[in-house]
Amino acid sequence: MKLERIFPGVWRLEDKILTKSLAPGKKVYGEKVIKIDGVEYRVWNPYRSKLGAAIKNGLKHWFFRRDGTVLYLGVAEGTTASHIADAMEEGVIFGVDVAPRVMPKLLKVSEDWNLILPILADANKPEEYREYIEAVGGKVDVIYEDVAHPDQTKILIKNAEEYLKPGGHAYYAVKARSIDVTKDPKVVFKEEKKKLEDAGFEVLQEIDLEPYEKDHVMFVLRWKG
Ligand SMILES: C[S@@+](CC[C@H](N)C(=O)[O-])C[C@H]1O[C@@H](n2cnc3c(N)ncnc32)[C@H](O)[C@@H]1O
Image (cartoon, rainbow, N blue to C red):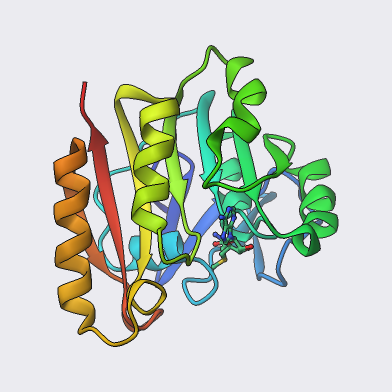
């Protein structure tokens, strides 16, 4: 079996994407695990994670550096965040979610994937988690957003203005139907892209997430600075 390294901490094995598990013997979402030369890897399911889908569909940019700082908006139960944590190995992922129901599972996941710091808060009110970001100097390297909310673009821009380092990066999963169910998704993506550019983001890549997610794209962005 030949492992091909595609990003720091991320490998390809035939048609599968893998991350080296930070918690051998444990699983987060029922994912498959594979042992190679005594090392345990977790198979990243692109149907369960939009970042996994983006990788399968040709993601070119990986900004999750070892020992970096990530603000993750809409972390849910930590499915995607756990793979990012595997890849980073060290650093911190501020995992924000507004839903109390996801917290018990997320807290459990964060015991083993301990880069993840669960925060129960509304991403539309960035001041709610200012104290946490202050602890790392007030700015992060990367924002990841996947919130399925009508104002999702505004939420990303607000958080970038508060907390993203100049020249920092964002991964933004856009669900067209959350923004406007009546519009052609292509029109929605074009309009959101314009809002991002007007706010000071450079769009590095726009990835259609079909067939893993219908009417979704992932924008990879660079913040002004
Ligand atoms: C599609 S799920 C995220 C899945 C997750 N990103 C993953 O890949 O593992 C969207 C999440 O956004 C959260 N959410 C929605 N509105 C939010 C808000 N205003 N602030 C924070 N989280 C929010 C929901 O509670 C839900 O858990």
